[in-house]
Image (cartoon, one colour):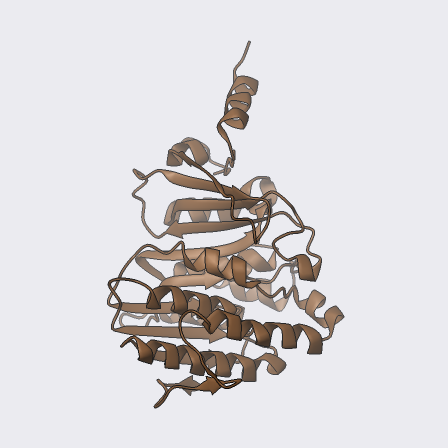
Length: 327
């Protein structure tokens, strides 16, 4: 289904939704969906909704100021991440002329919420003079992503995005599963859902386009995620990594125990810029510590495994160097 810009401002609960209140409004949909959806079914899908503070932090990381913003939200839920990014863009001093959002969501109970979110995004954009176009696809992104990458082999047929914002599902996929067979069509070999979503998305990203995703930290090292890290290193340059000190804070309502990080990367091999490593205790923590490192300090250029060395503070970095130095 396709949603075009609204003809008039929408009112919800008697109030006009604007860029300041958009995400707050969408969070009502998240809470309602959390209440209605079967929790065991959600856990089986690896589905965890993004809380507003996390969505705002992720949206704030994008740096490019283009005239047309083409956003991919590949596991959209009720549209919290899309709404956060639209609200952020509406506050830019140099605003784009057009925002498009392409969203994928397989859960039928979320589609109405997602459509309402896009209607609200359209209204908010109209208030600040930005055209908004949204498309919602109720289908599996892995199949759709593989198809889009394959179509991209035909000149002029590839769908392109310059912004990807994502909270992909978490969970393993079997070696003989339909998903693994599809991914092999585009030379992707991975056994985890979050990399199965993120990897094809990166192939669809335009040159210099940006991705911001919240994922488990597990991809950073170990042989299991080596192929993904190698592909990430060949395509992307890291710009920022945000760490939550507490394993439970990022998705505390959903009881997620994995350690999560937010990664911001650009489709560029220019690694001259410093990479920001930021840390907070949880989602509502106003105190964020920030450290900047060289890119090759984070991912060493001579490391064939492309391990991502996340060291949150200078003291830990010195200890790590001392431990690695032969005596």
